[in-house]
Image (cartoon, rainbow, N blue to C red; front, side, top):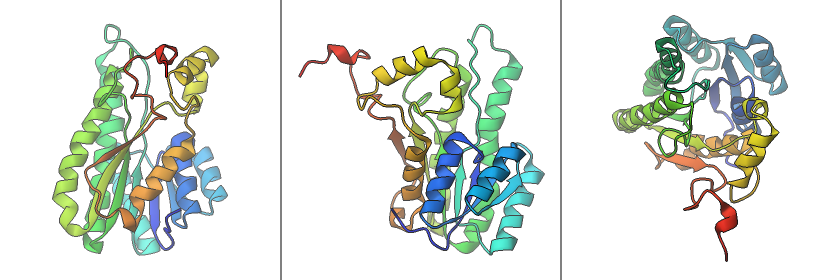
Length: 254
């Protein structure tokens, strides 16, 4: 694995699931990991497990975001890696969707990412170095799924923001990239039921659901110094899910 020894990393939404998988991989690679999350109990547990720090962090609270980023920089002298992972994915059809449903998803997934990245860039610019990794999704930019119009729109928006941010900050030694997970085995997927999980697994060529650590290992690569010539890009991590011309892999004969 790439060596992140001496690096300081903030993972938003890092208390559990994909965020925890990212945090664990960063720790394994040698980084000091700080968890920022609204789930204080699980956030502190994850931080203790990884010998890291925890900050209560609501990503749509600008003052709180600025305080957390400033506190990390003062305590550790730098913030070299940001994994902007905090997000939600409630399911509701367009017909039943309210303005509040739409606004909540856009606020957390898009505005929240913007506020955290904006605050972090201020310090990374002074350092003349930084690695930012967004957790986006295949949904929105590549695929769609019933009930996730608001979620898909938010994840596509993240990528549009990422590309311009990458251009604006490339000259400061800062790279900004995104990971697009497919179906990862999280509590949300488990709650959808065994039938749904089996259905999803059946359309993945590698025939398994992804693990949170699979996203983490990709984040470690993008957060490494070796990935310095990559910016404004996205990496799909989905076991080949978006590749088949037919969703029914049983129809593919070789």
